[in-house]
Every structure is written in C-alpha cells, then in structure tokens.
Image: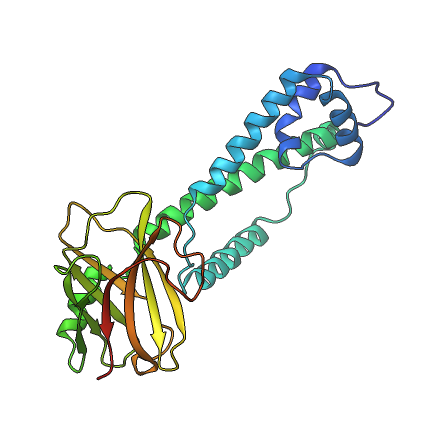
Length: 266
C-alpha cells in the first residue's frame, strides 16, 4: 500500500510491479490497482506471461531427488552458527530517514528479488547434491550381471511364443526372490504403433500388467527389470504380448499374440 494521499500509480510504476505481482508479493491495494490496470494493457500482459514462464522454467530445471540424510543436520548447524554471529554483532539500527523511504512498494520488490534468489539457490543446491550423490540405482543390465554373480540366485528359460520362434533369453531372480531381470534376444521388429506388454501371473491365475516396453533395433539383447511386488514364489509365470502402442485396453488380459513366456513352476 502506498503511503500518504498519493493518486493512482503511473504506468511506469505499474510496470515495475510486474515481477512482484508474478510471485504474489503485492499487498491487497497494490494488487487491486495493478489488476484493474492490467486488463487494459496487452503489452503488460505479455510481459507478465514472460515472467511467469521464466519462474516456471526455473522450477522444473531442478530434478526431483531425495535429500541426503546429512542435509538437515548441516542446515541446522549453519543456522545456529549464523545466529551466533548476528548476536555477537548486536542489533543493526536502520537510520530513521532510510526507514521512512522504505515504502511498502519497495518492500514488495525486495520480496520479489528474495524469492527469485531462493529459487536459484535451491536449483544450485540440488545440482550440487546431484553431483555429490549421483543416482546409484543400477541399470537393468547391471542388475542382471549383479544377480547372475549372486550366490543362490535362480535362472529360468524363456519360451518363444506365437510371433517368432527365434526369441530366446532367460530370467534371473535374486537369492531372496525379491528382484528379477529379463534378458531377451532376437525380439521381433515392431513399428511405433505397437508395444510389448509384460504380464505377471500369480499362483491363483490372476494376471497383472508389468508395463510396456519397446525393443531397440540397435541392440540384439534387451534387459527388462520385472516389477514384482511379492517374492517370486507367489508367481507361476511371466509373459509378454504384442499390443497397440498404448497397451491392452484391459488391465488383466492381453489382446495380442504371445511373444514369449517364462514358466516359473514345473
């Protein structure tokens, strides 16, 4: 809110409020006057759209990653040290003349700048964390090799289906029966309007989709992590069907021919 009995803001003053408005840093009076003016100024509307687009872009630049366990303790330690330093310096007095010049509008602009700084610092922090703590989740091929070397792991043969009899491969299962990876070679070539769909069939005969995947024409062998949520003993077989690009319209039934299957029980 402006101090005193000043009249309406000039266009230049209103244009200067666009960054603060874009992040919601105006007070009620300023926002009302700004929005009433904005309706009749197409150029200002375009400028506002640009500011919002930049803010949205900054947010999505940051990849979603879990914070490391030590981050909370580190931040608390730094905040404690900062408070101690401020206490040692004593309170900072703002000169009366400076205080009078800090209008509500200036405060809104400062809030806008502060918010943008927080966003940028957050992105930098996430990028630093990403470099310090890279994703350690192994790829499907790496997990296959890891499970193959694991003592007590199990291996099951792939049985070709109705599409091509040249398909071959195997399924490797961890010793605890909680992780599984398919290694498949000589998959049939398919167009972009088709997809392979993985099916998991439990011991009761209930079939659930394990997701869609595409073969890679540049690779003869593909590795697929099987999304099992129960020990392997809870399943009787896995299979893959050839479906439309979006998958079978039914959640528990394939509509296309069987590409291959993996029996898990005799």
